[in-house]
Amino acid sequence: MTVLFRRVFVYDAASATAMTGPLDVLVDGDRIAAVDHDLPIPPDARIVDGGGRHLLLPGLINAHFHSPANHLKGSVRSLPLELFMLFESPSDPVLAPTPREAYLRTILGAIEMLQRGITCVQDDAFLMPGPDPEIIDAVASAYRDSGIRAFLALDQPELTEAEKLPFVDELDDASRRAFDAPAPAGAHELLAAYDHLLTTWHGAADDRIRAAVSISAPQRVSLDYFAALDDLAERHGLPMYAHMLETKVQRTLMTQQPRFEGRSLVQYTATAGLLKPHTNVIHAVWVDDADLDAIADAGSTVVHNPVSNLRLGSGVLPWRAMLSHGIPVALGTDEAICDDTINVWTVAKIAGLIHNVSGLDSDDWPTPTEVLGALWQGGARATGRSDLGAVTPGMLADLAMVDLHAIAFTPLNDLREQLVHCEDGRDVVLTMVAGRVVAEHGHVTTVDETALLDEVRETFAAKLPAIHAARSGAGELYPAYQHIVRRAAKTDVGFTRWLTPLRKNS
Ligand SMILES: [Zn+2]
Image (cartoon, rainbow, N blue to C red; front, side, top):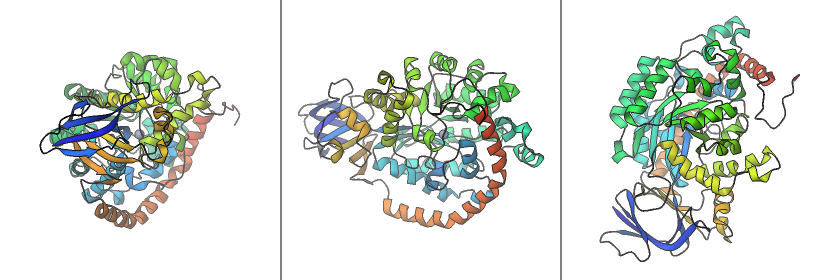
């Protein structure tokens, strides 16, 4: 298919005003073929006339996400991660999704993203109770049908709770027994699921769907399984997703779990030779300078999820130190249960603001140029694709067109500032992925959006009582997790990522 955008402004990161135009942009197949004045109209081309008031941006990249919680937005109050996870996905078998439910919840998220011009997502999908091939197929089918570009990994822990958490030896016997329960799936089963994912879906839909690998987090897997996934990543050129030092609880593991031998989760991973250029270090809130050195030396990318970090009280990552180390930073929403939108625009805004509380030296605060760089260049770097994140010939035609006559840009004072601080996705009038128009005027055109949303409402309203029942059962372990969180809060790790200084006696 050929599409000619006529008389559009084009986002240009190198320009003083961040845009050039009006110009014509020719899309041929899945790529941008030309950006120039007065391009000839090819036969059979669809013409999209920007009328000199529309701006073509690279499609936004959501570099970190978990689709299985898409139907759970707003359903759990703000809590620290370790308490939040207790209610987020109770392992009650009654909550195991049918393939249709997995399809619906996935496409619900894809619709929300495409409406807002988010064209690429890295889905670190945790499939409870286990990564059944039918459920993997349902998730990937939803991405295929929606038209979004997706990287799909299986975020499955392999170890027991007792091996993943600090201060477990201080718990009562009943809690200890619960923490010693085996993970739902072992390494052999998980690797078989990856085999299915790679064989069936890697490169599907004309390479719009790709596989990725996920260890979930270094403390949640054995080094053998970690190395097996790294081997898959190396052989197939896949990104590797790894949550690291999201919370202070995770920082305390270095002294509270003997296998880490006093090393942070970043240092433990680096020492094992498993911190790599393909690694997405997700969160990286409770990192110190030595961790940043290791991430920079490895050439890994950090994925910053500031809304999730605020929702769960995780803390604020050291933005300026990270950039000073030359570490690429990408932006992610994290999951819909802890954002609770799947909106990378608002993530960019919060990323642009939250670091201003790091101190009064405003030279250390994020600039809109840096935030937009994280959104597009950082996002592309996280996926391992060099053909995403710019509106130039040869790049993939993943585009978002916004209306410059909308309130967010009226009057237009500074495009970069207004993209970060004014736009929230509502002014995206057209979304294109791989050269195909997938959303226009706020609605997805690839699927029957109204019918799907009706089915989502009916399906998950019927499921809500079971979710509530499972959560109240899971709540029995709340005191045990709260003990761990409170013990970690009181532990002096040498620095803080919260706004308040460590109160030693609280
Ligand atoms: Zn996550």
